[in-house]
Amino acid sequence: MPASLDANLKAVRQTVARSAERAGRDPMQVELVAVTKGFPVERIREAIAVGLRIFGENRVQEALPKIEEIGPADVDWHLIGHLQTNKIKFIEGRFRMVQSVDGAALAEALDGRLQSPLDVLVEVNVAEEPQKTGAPAADLAILTGAVQATQHLRLRGLMTVAPMVEDPEAVRSVFRRLRVLRDETSQRLGVPLPVLSMGMTDDYAVAVEEGATMLRLGRALFGPR
Ligand SMILES: *Cc1c(COP(=O)(O)O)cnc(C)c1O
Image (cartoon, rainbow, N blue to C red; front, side, top):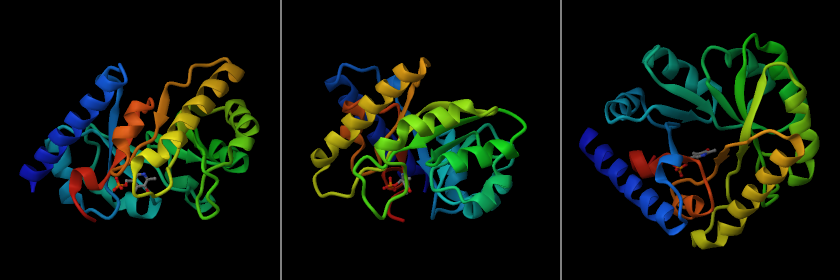
């Protein structure tokens, strides 16, 4: 229902504005990625109608038919879930950004299939949860170095999925840590890394306070999956 999506988007923007204000940040520096996994193409059309322009999908397989159906509208697609090597061939020309680069071998394989530049984020498993994807922070220097050494990948920043907790305050330290890792990486490589993709439906208010520049929101926009 476009009406409820519209209302949800307004509520999200209000929350972002309040969190940004608390942190002395400009809310315009926070981009919304509408996460459409599990939602049909009609919801994506409604999202485009209310002004959303960046869409996130977890799985290439689920994304392909949606990207095809939406067609060359004025939207960007981001891959936000683990990229399997056998899906690398589908990235070019469809995805504007891969947020989930989590290994040097994957970065090199992806680079080998590309003919044009691609923006990427390195995904960090900050809390080192064993069941989660993302590189451990200890690997970040080598991994980001490998990404920088490729021909086509343009490292734009870091991404993380915080642990699921009852109280979002419990993951503030995870977001803070990602920002420090981003600052250190930027210094080490001598390049600006403007993007901090962190914050989902249950924790985005805290993520904005801690410096998120990109929120990945599914349920906050579209309701329960
Ligand atoms: C599903 C998903 C999201 C969005 O989750 P919500 O809780 O619906 O906001 C964000 N990032 C990643 C990596 C996801 O898999």
